[in-house]
Amino acid sequence: MKRIVALVVLMFGGYAFAQETTVINVKSSAAQDALVSMAKDSAEAQKAKDDLLAKARKALEDKNKPLIDQMKVKAKPSQDKIDAYTKIWQTKIETDTKDIRVVVEKNNKEAEENYKKQVAPLDPKILSPQTLKTLEDIVKKEQSLPADATFDSQKQVWVVPSKAATSPEAKK
Image 1 (cartoon, rainbow, N blue to C red):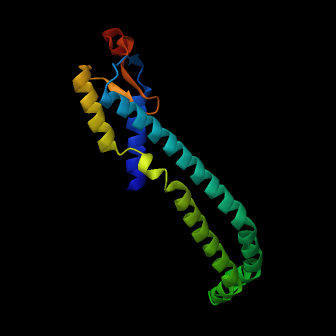
Image 2 (image 1 turned 180 degrees about the vertical axis):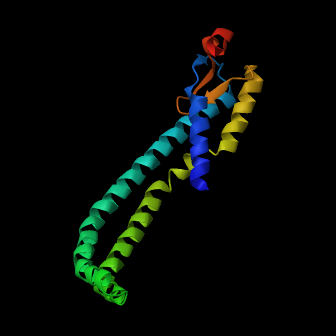
Image 3 (image 1 turned 135 degrees about the vertical axis):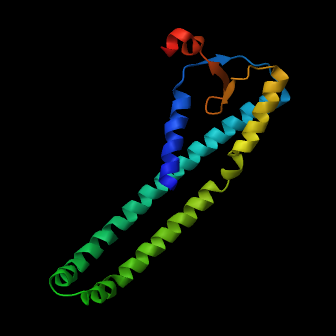
């Protein structure tokens, strides 16, 4: 179910961002300045968090690969016997690889804890959708922006659909 929701979000979310837009100038105000600043901090924090997650995953993969390969080598003779004879050999595999699996599980836990420590300072900087929407609504109202104006939080600019993209000729 989660994959379907993610796919739908990607399909429709991607479509919304695929539209041609035009950047509009907005006067500086407390809400506008806060929105731009917070969106910039949020985008930078999210990128840093994503980078740290990728590094943590790669480091864990590199750390566990030799152990997993060892486990496969140790398990192969027993696995062949299981295939040839019965499921009784499954217990032998589990016994033969128990120590290695404990190390892999420990590595997984360490990697997760290290990642959480690294991203903890970034989490407060990442805006919730509700905060972003509230600030957008305030700026839209105080700046009398068009109803179709949206704030691009990644670029920290306001945009509206381009005239060419909304003209009757473009829709044909």
